[in-house]
Image (cartoon, rainbow, N blue to C red; front, side, top):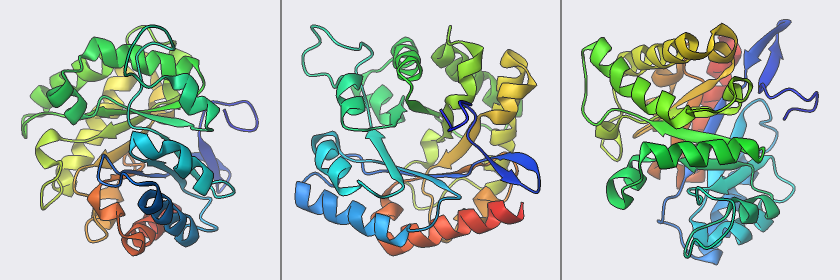
Length: 275
C-alpha cells in the first residue's frame, strides 16, 4: 500500500492523480551467479539514483534473489520473484514460497509468463491462484498476458485477452485489482529483433483497459497500470510509451546494459511527465 493506505499507485501531477509509470526488468536465467547478479543490480541502482518518479523493479534469477536483495538495500529499486508456488507453504517440493520472498523484502511477483505456460505447462487456473495469493499477502503481481500470434482483428484479440485476464483474476476482490500491474507481452514479439508496432501496442492497451472496465467498472480500470514487454529497447521505447494507456515497459535482454536501462528509464520519465 502507499503511505496513505491506498492501494492505488499514483503521483500528483498538476493537482490530478496520475498512474505512476513503471520500468521493470526480468533477467530470466541469464544472470545466475552471485557476483554477476549483484554487480549488475548495483550498477542499475547507481544509474537510477534520484529517479523516484518512476517505479522500478527487477526480477533476478531465483537462485540469486537473496544476494540481489542485499545489494539493493538503500536503493529505490524494488525486487521480487519470477515465479512462486500457488500455495503459501506445505508439501510442495521444489517450489518457491511467497513467504521466503516476503522475508527477503521482495515486493513484486512475476506471474504467468509465456515461458511458464509453454515450457512448464502452467494453466490459467494456477495463474489465478498465484495472483490471488500475491495480492492477499500484500505484494504486487506483475501479471503477463498476450496473444500467441498477431491478431489484427480487434475482437479476436479482445476475446483472447479477456479470457486470460478474467480467468487470472477469478474471484479476486475488486478493490485489489488496481494493485496489479498488467504486463502485455504478445508472445509473437518476445525475444524477437523488433517489438510489436507501437500502433498495435497502443490499440491493445486500450483493449485491455476496456476489458477491466467492463468487468470491474471505471475506477479500477483507470487505476490499474498496463506495461508493455517484448523486445523493448532504448530505440523504440519512446514511441511505445507515447500513449495514455501505456504506463511503462517490462525490459528483457536490453536491460542487461545499465546504460541502456538508464536511457529507457529517462525516456519513460520524460514522456510521462509531459503527458
